[in-house]
Image (cartoon, rainbow, N blue to C red; front, side, top):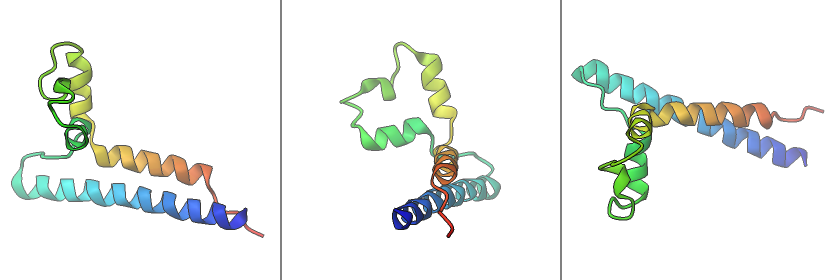
Length: 95
């Protein structure tokens, strides 16, 4: 069981640092171009779902506030938070 916990913790570390790298790349692009062109949750959802399957992603007719919030939240920051939670839950066992 200790081996599994160590592997899970390494995955959590990988997720955490991937999110940090993604956010640093977005900041670099902002500093270079002066325009924030980050990857939001809506942008990532549009990559997973076809807009014809879920037209709310491109043109919300209701829940416009939720759409605005999801379009504002940065995907790499969510990945960092997810990785941090996984790291906290999956600390390796020391003998």
